[in-house]
Length: 187
Image (cartoon, rainbow, N blue to C red; front, side, top):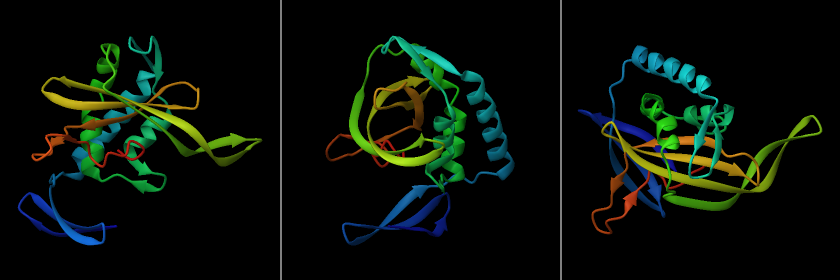
């Protein structure tokens, strides 16, 4: 459970969360982002996203579509749960790298196959149905930016852009990557 920012100190936010029944404080870097910069980045990002349409990916040997679902996911973690302005800002600023990464990707870095409840139009109404979902991960360093691109495929449908995830950290003890929450549906 997330309790939100409880106090600000310099450029860090102190955040509390309950993990495994234990209250934990997190120190997160906060961007002091003027709202006009955010709005400008969001507007430019939306225009860019809508202009992309499809990108050929050599790994899949097919086109990846940039549809409404991907744009919605850049703005929202889940349905009716918006991302923070800082999170959206970073994703929209790096969005121009996504087509370039997909065009040059010949190697897949990760795959997750699971089942998720997906919204589906059935007989002029929307239902939520459990379907097999695959997430494909491409990682690249372009223009000094390290990013992950996530491609989503529902059942045997068309593959589409799902997310761009900026810089990830490393766990000092295990030397493993910390990839945001590690939940592709929300990351």
